[in-house]
Length: 573
Image 1: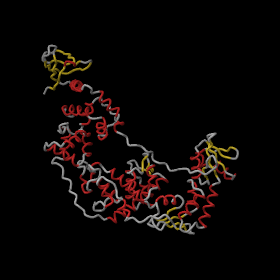
Image 2: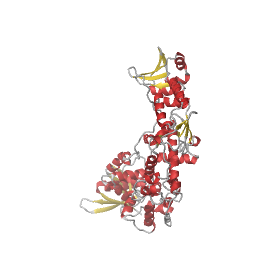
Image 3: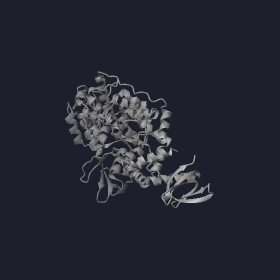
Image 4: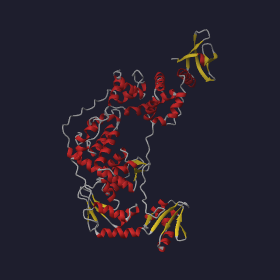
């Protein structure tokens, strides 16, 4: 139980906090929005509990932590800015004096003070070429991760980490050189909003899909800004940049996981070319580190130039003579399997890859037009033949949504194929039934289309006019704005404020209630009708109906005192 004076002082402070400050405090202490607290005294009691204080200390940055330790050990009160921050975290009173529960926690964790943060050494130059290569390599690797996730979401285990099987999938596909780098890339994508979670898997977000269409430098710059903005508060400067990297490990002195977190963030920024191996910031990141923006011109000079043409060859391959522009690479990979990734990538076409492109909405005409536009060697006859043959095959089964009836229809001119689909047990989930020379179902057209495609039927989705239409299969992560603590804790805060409109009366009733529960002997000061005061020493026995009941041991009588006449109560030592 916290000291009563601290409890009352904090309750008064909580009542004075603006709603947004109080909501942020409750969020930082992980208070359930369903907490059954009745008033600010209940809140103060819980916030001064040792476990709650222990949750608050690791959140303090270096300056706040050292100021709190100085207040505890040396009695030195912090300056106004830091004092206000500590006060809003319910660690010190309005005068800067730490609460007793905080003093106890700090003395346990830092009985002799905290070590100073290491001074960052000045580095005159950074290894720009290596940092630029890391930026280019990981921007391409992150694109591979997103494309693979669009094909199939990345499963998560119970802890929220990437599953071992998914790590192997990313490594096997060439998106990451190792399982550790797969974790790094997925973590970066999640932190920067390119991936989102439905709780069971990582999914590409709408922002992630749009990112894939950006040129390489825009991809890099967008993610660089997002990484900077996602850095922990303890690493950030007042100007919005970041403190020197060597100081990060000691930036949260009360947090035992601080060095591990610092290493993780250092790895991320090094991978993205914002830090080199010595912790120095390359020229293109200096503005970002200072709270401004990136200088992509400084990075552009060190990146290989992108190309917008490929060599199409008779063996059904395409060779890019340099890094292919991202929007062209994304589309080319929708119709060909990439065989190698380097500054000169190779892609291979097949009936299966062309079929997949047509399934996703391409047509023979759109395929020919695109490939002719980007080819330095025209459209080879073998590739044109595969396109024509595959396109003709894929048009044999047509899936249409009938707006009038609300049904989905499946049509084909091949009676044998129609009968096969009618009895195919793998299609049982879409419940196809025969109606004349077509199959019908109440299942949505897109679901039917993908069921037929997965079962290897040459299906194409068509609109009401019979024209092929693209069907988007990739499921994107729902875009959810972070929950505002003020919204989460609004009802609780409203209840706490309603329960403490008269803080003096509420505190008096609370003290009396505790005395009754403990059958304690207390001195009760009562205001008499003539204006004088009298002290009764009672063993508190009951509280209700606006009255305190207790046994006056000196007079050996039971007394009942109106709460409205009681000025104060104090325990008997």
